[in-house]
Image 1 (cartoon, rainbow, N blue to C red):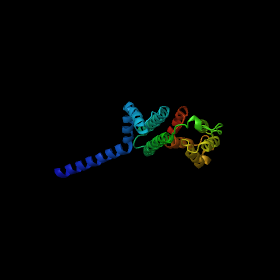
Image 2: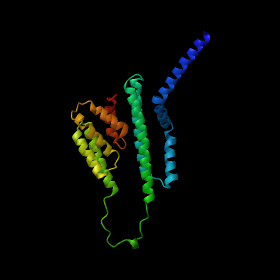
Image 3: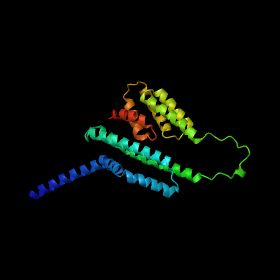
Image 4: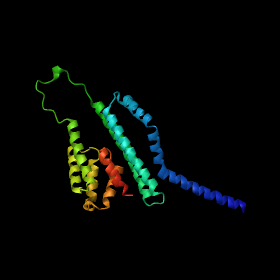
Length: 243
């Protein structure tokens, strides 16, 4: 009898242990990853710059600072999701959705960082020294628009789109993101946001529709790379209402 009781107790402990491990794996591992980044962010920053020098041979400077700033903003978003998960509790129906959003957020962060680094590397590989003065024609043809000018126009259109989302104006948002995509098709996530808006357009006509928080949630977790920081705060606030 004592032996059977002991086996039963061990069995219960095993089941409880498995539940705890499953909970940690499903809900707590992103917290560990974020804590590591936040605690050791100086070392991470140093590593980024060292990899920049080792891989590309030059110091990219402003571009790396921009990538770092965006990455830290994305990490702050994850912290907001973790706080929402903690507030909801493991028994809340929203908790699995938040865990899924955290996974999506981290996956998109990795994807965007990989893309940005690849773009920097591509620019460095295609750089060529200017031709000597003797090789230049007497009258150079008109040069194409500067990349900085295209980026500025796309950024302005993207900003109008996010502002329209905050104002719950879906028509203006679609127009702005389409404009940004026409200027620069691969700029941040303007194409993906435009597609999402069209999927939910009929449900976003009402400014008070509960679909608006769900849209903010999807944008924050999947399409937030490059979002202006001041507008990101409002999107975060709206996304919290989805849980």
